[in-house]
Image (cartoon, rainbow over all chains, first blue to last red):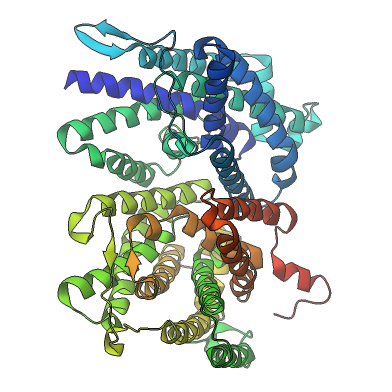
Length: 283
Length: 328
């Protein structure tokens, strides 16, 4: 029981790691990036190829992958999102969904649908914690996720730059009037959010398979975490991610493993019933 | 729903669009007499079906402004209800399809309560969650075929909607599409339709003017779901084989939305127009490259979504409107 819950906790931290980038982008730019899972997939492939071709361990290449993804996020913002920002919300949802589909199919074509995994990384092995044995990659990724959430939290809520972000989130035009360039801030947020998901992707390769549709596995759960956590709330996304991990573990332990995701979605709809803007959403 | 009565304001016009739709349906019904190519007929049928699905979606997504990305759930529920009734109770789809529609209406009524209060991204996410719940439940429900799916029996029994050739299905689709168009036309031009657009414009203002917003939002969702469910039942009989992945599919749900967007959201003809353009494109690429095993057809579909939203956000209808006054 406790063992299942602990494993669930670390799974939840991984969901949180994937979700924070999404929460950041959504909170500041009011855009929900339906290609987020495919960003993760790109990060995973980048780490995979860096290891296979360049012999760079994912633990070390994670910052490189983060930088690469930041650049990619900037491109996506500049080429797609910026043009649609003043249009209806539906246009952006659809455009990012289409982008995700394109990226997934391109990965399918160029990287083949094979499931790949990294056999032996610096993190391989297990740690024992109070008599329980946990995978070392999961523990490290979970802790890094916590650190990333904390760092982003400080960056957004405690620094001058973060206040500029919040100003743009609050009101684009007024922010522009006081000298904050909204387009540049939005681009920075896209870079930061994409870098966060790149980091998560690189670390994920140490214990999870890499395949073209890996993004949908984590992507949908990341959306649920972000919506459940509440509009743009970083701590909310983190707590909701952990909650999802724990619920999965509980359902898998008490009922049937096949139903664990169902209970997550049902809980999600129940949460929205009682709090239509998520657990920590601003009303 | 009564059709627009004298109470619903000055907008009651002679229903020439209905006459035009009847003429179009009659023309389409004649196509099999001229064209015998199975593929052309299949593309036409799919275009008609997706036009209808887009029109059903449009009631919620266009006129009410609540974007549902999970309309596939109603296709799935309708299709599964029809085939399960046929499979286990030997009930004819002539009854099973309407029952599937009713079941969809019930699901929509239940789910509409908590979700229709949401707006924007939250509603979209809630409908996706609903779709995933449906998908995962059906995969694990052995009685309903589980992950393997269900087959319609083979045979030639018209009262069971089983035909050897696909042509009768085509005629059924044309008839159903005509009914779908008429229903959406009458709804949109009735008081209900005005209420929906008022809620879409400004829900609080509409409430303050006495529009019972809760009830009418639910009504839109329930009607849209019921019609979608009927089409789901038809689709299941037409393809003769259903599985959770194809019926509760996010890609299909997005295709429904895309058809409406490509044509023009919140217009009556938009979805049909969008389907007439998109379905030949997607089916054509599927035939050309789908067998390569690389999923090129999906790549083209994704690119189409990107290009449409980037360069034609108002839909094909706007191309026509730019030239002159909008004479809807």
